[in-house]
Amino acid sequence: MPPATVTPEPATEALEGARFENLLLEFLAYLELERGLSRNTLNAYRTDLLQYGDYLRANEMDPLEVDPAEMSEYVANLTEGNGSGRRLASSTIHRKTAALRSFYKHLRREDLVVADPTAGLATPRRSKKLPNVLNQAEVTRLLGTPSGDSPQAYRDRAILEVMYACGLRASELIELEMTDVDTYEGMLRARGKGSKERIVPLGRQAIHALDGYLRAGRPELSKGRPEKALFLNFRGRRLTRQGLYKIVQGHARNAGLEDRMSPHTLRHSFATHLLAGGCDLRAVQEMLGHADVATTQMYTHLTGQQLRDVYYASHPRAQAN
Image (cartoon, rainbow, N blue to C red; front, side, top):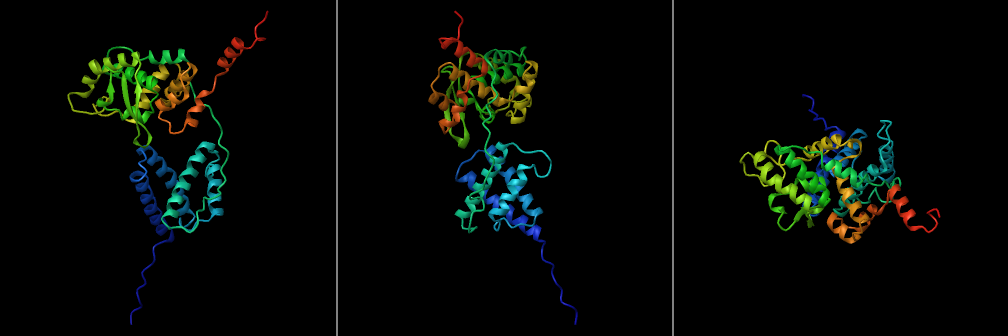
């Protein structure tokens, strides 16, 4: 009688990997369909949780059976940079642990875990890092760098002016469509986080730059193709986030600001300059699209020079007799 054929069971690692991937896909679908999170936010969740999945597979751990001690060990491993010797910033740890908490909260809600291993999880205190802000002279220098009358120059002038005039996020700028801008009324419609729309005023310089781009820049870039996007790349397609970053970095380099610039720097500068000019905090919150005014309050900081100016202008004993 021939020996019975024994079918080998799949490796534990493979089983746990497949289980985690299925759980992750279901969680991301929930975030997209029920919570309406943006593509960029979904990608951030996916990246952070895939890293967690790699850790589970490497240690042959079942995502549904992780206990609080094992979760704390994973976060400690993250804090130390996964053995790379480079410690992660506290803000990065907070983002990654927030993703884990949301993930396990979802699993608990679906009755897939009995207890949440992230409950009571200790994370490092988040450092209060002030945003990088350009002063008004630096903004003027940056906005003056796109020169000439090429289609790209018209586009880049419009991009920089609109980002500073409206305080847009990078994702909001590249998602602008032709129908979102009204240069006659001087208004712009932005789609923020969670697909929330808001109306933001356009200043005169931004209107002028947009009119120039729409008249002499965009028609050349579109090459006659129908395209809803406002800002186009050299192929006549919607500008990507990477393309926007290269544009901003290129002009920052020409303005001598390369080490201090990202697309978000103009958003920080927009908010700070409005508040310094006396704009109401709630109005700035609305224009930035912040759900919580506490997020906007970080822009109420003053630079050292501003503090000195206020002190010498206000304190009765600051000036010599």
